[in-house]
Amino acid sequence: MREGEEEIRALLVEDDDGDAAIFCRQASRLIRPKLTLIRVASEQEALACLDAEQFDLVFVDLNLAGRGSGMNLLERLQSSALAVPTIVVTGSGDEVRAVEAMKAGAHDYLVKDTLTPEQLERSIRNVRERHTLEQERARMVAKLAELSVTDELTGIANRRYLVQKMEEEVRRSERTGHLFSLLMIDLDHFKLVNDRFGHQKGDEVLRQVAATLERNIRRTDSAGRYGGEEFCVLLPETGPAGACRVAEKLREAVKGLPDPVPTISIGVAFWEPYVSMDDILRRVDEALYEAKAAGRDRVVVHRGGKAACRDAHGASADVQPEFADRPATSGNA
Image 1 (cartoon, rainbow, N blue to C red):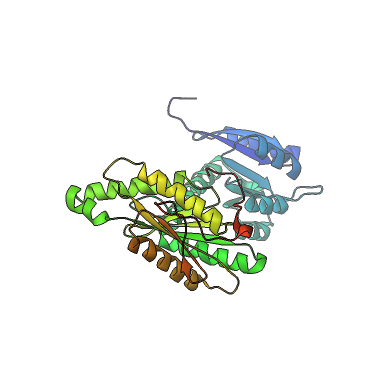
Image 2 (cartoon, one colour):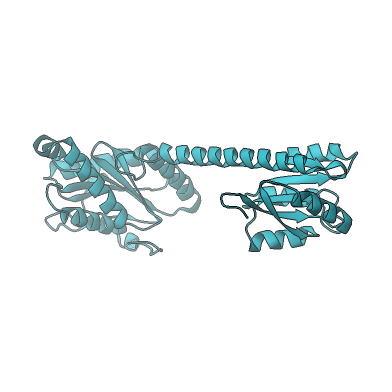
């Protein structure tokens, strides 16, 4: 192969030896791209080959004999994770089925009886260009979806994502009766950081805190920036005692960061039957307010109209024994 010449690995799914020979002969006459063909004769062989090797393109005969047809293979390729562009090959008079195949996901079709190297080259070029555009569009859609739920400054989840996860947890808890807890975290005297060191340093502090929160929770938990200098952590399958332990762990972890990272105050609330998401958010805000009013750098849990939990001065948690365990799952905590 000449330097710079493109090589394409393609799978030909054709059960007729004569048709396969004709197709391979036309493919060998291509000037560019260089086409390397691997031929199989059935749907099952094709799927096994695609699973074992990587191909740039698949040519499928629509009239495969035996248990699997070309249309079956096409449908299975479309429903699988194999993102390989497909060109169907059919005989004269069968163009209606070829159009149906394109509606089912094929990128193009060729009529084998009148196939020329020029037609084959043009089809390959057009299909690969279209496939590249489709992949790029899919990447852009995925990136936009990620950006829509990611906080631009800190790189962790944003408020929209947190609200979505909270709504999911409320619905799940209503079905299962399992508890979940919510932590609302505020950086103490954060305005002083911006005033003394500038907003760039303040942004760096927010990123440090965000990274610290994510390092110290389970993979099943969700940490995000709720707004400004407020962060939120959602703890599935976790009651008040477990939530307090996590909150204390986070408070100590942030407190151990180098200056000028300030301390944090944490409010804790948890789901109970017939409690709405708005009620949970109201309760966690009240608990955070109590933590700030009591001197900051502490954890306060909202429970039964009271706000009391272990704080910076060693006060014990006001929780019941049945909520003492926080189930272990794979993760960092």
